[in-house]
Structures are given as structure tokens and as C-alpha cells.
Length: 282
Image 1 (cartoon, helix red, strand yellow):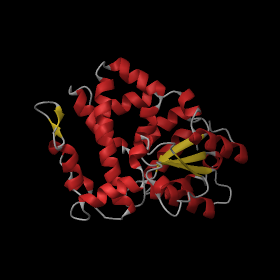
Image 2 (cartoon, rainbow, N blue to C red; image 1 turned 90 degrees about the vertical axis):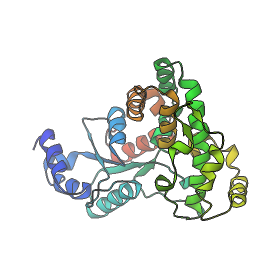
Image 3 (cartoon, helix red, strand yellow; image 1 turned 30 degrees about the horizontal axis):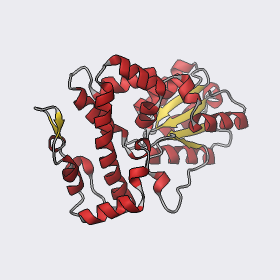
Image 4 (cartoon, rainbow, N blue to C red; image 1 turned 60 degrees about the horizontal axis):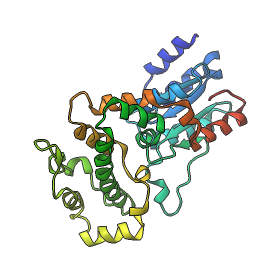
């Protein structure tokens, strides 16, 4: 079975785990290094960073069609346990694991982004910042606005996570209450509005105490901001339709350099793994 057929076959089966286990029965599949990532954007980036001749990158799709970090971990752990000779590792977003108590333990063969998520890792990279700045002179100011919103929302998302409040932000947070499309500016009371979405669960004083206790105002924006929040408000602040979230994302993925990748802990972890497993991944 050639590589093209292998990729086709693995895409036809329900669920990434089942697809890989079936593919591993072939000579090509048994030699393949499998990399499990959360979603399509991860595939687009890491296919540029990893050795495409040796590695096949798959999204973390379960039998129900859903993806995410939990699937990355479970697919890797289960295949390693079930297939003695499997060469497989996963890459997931760090999310808010750095703040969890007790300390979050990642499974063997699962590696994490240096920053909160893929998007924040990219936005921090000098190669990406340079390209975005050259793309539009408005980037620096717009990015500052987006980070400001991202930090506030990130602190609230972390509070929701650590206190297990079960607030679904996408259902409660209205973009129009944060960004005024007519003036192209943040609403004057946007900060208080953002905090108010948690008032059903905790008080404003509780939120302030949480931020103070964890010293969140001292935490890097790249560790607290959810990348999708930052990209949404970056796109809005840039105003023009050509600067959509998808176009910004594509620009970042294409701009990210191998040198920036090689400077990450993620790269170091993958390099160590490839040495232990005697394969060529990076």
C-alpha cells in the first residue's frame, strides 16, 4: 500500500484511533510515525514543521466526530497500550494546566505548546509578528486592543475552569457588548460586561479576589489569553474584511519559521522523543 492509499484509507474509517490501528496492519503503516493533534489548524502548522516523509499527522477525531485535547491524550495512551511497536505521539494545547492544583500530569508521549494554545504560540513568534506588521501598519495597535480583551476574558475563563463554574462563554458573551461596530472601538463598559457573565455563579468581589490571589495581572498574556478570543478582536480592530480570523490564521501558520519552532520546549520534547525511538521526526 503506497502512502497516498494509506492516507485515503485512514480518512475513510470512523475515528482516528480505528483508522490508525487499521493502517498499522500494512507495511507502510507499521513504519509510519503517527502524530495526533487537536484540529485542522494544528495539522496545517505541524505538517510544515515535521518530517512529512516519516510522519502522518491526524486530528483527534473520535467515533462521535468530536476533537480536542482529551481525545489527543486518550488516542495516544490507548494505542501505545494496545500496539507494542506503535510509534505515536500527540501534541495538544497547554490550556490552563499550568494553573491547576494538583499539578496536571501529561501522559507519556503527549507534548504541549509552550503557551496557552497554538494561536498564542504563533502570535508570540518574531517571524509571525514581523509578517503581520508588514501585512498592515494597523497591526500593532489592533493587537494591543485584542490582547487587552484577551487578558480580561482569559482571567475569567481561568476562574471558570478552576472553580468549575460550568459557564458556557459562547452562549453568554455577546460581541456587540464589547466591540462597537459603528465607532470601531471598545465599548466604555466592556470590562464590567465581561465580568458580569459570571455573576450568576460568583460575585464581582470573588472575581477580583481570584485575580489577586493568583497574581494574574503579572502573568504573561500569552499564557492567559485564549487564542481564538485574541484573533476575533484582532480581526474586529483591523476593521477591513480582508483581515478575517481565517485569513489572519493562515497568514500566521505560513509565516511561522522553523527557527522559532526550534526555540520552543515543544521542539525539544519532540527531539528527545525521536532520539529515544530512533526515528526522524523533526
